[in-house]
Image (cartoon, rainbow, N blue to C red):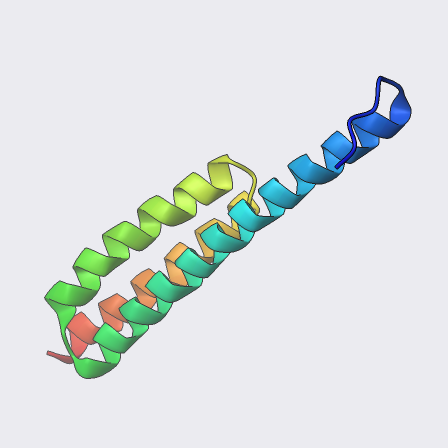
Length: 95
């Protein structure tokens, strides 16, 4: 990239660089959340309540962190946590 002296153009280039970094970070966090949620669901399907509970605690932490940084909306995080908890509770009721 060519270094320019000053002006709007340089700020536009800088904001593009920042947007790209933020986008990559946000995508990584969202992928992590999806992966952890799938791990909880597979543990529930396999009938492992202890493992599901442990992974669920990690999922709650990641969802809260993403919501606090505005990567995902707070209500979406709450909804995901509620649905995962519901699945874990159905597993406990079956036994």
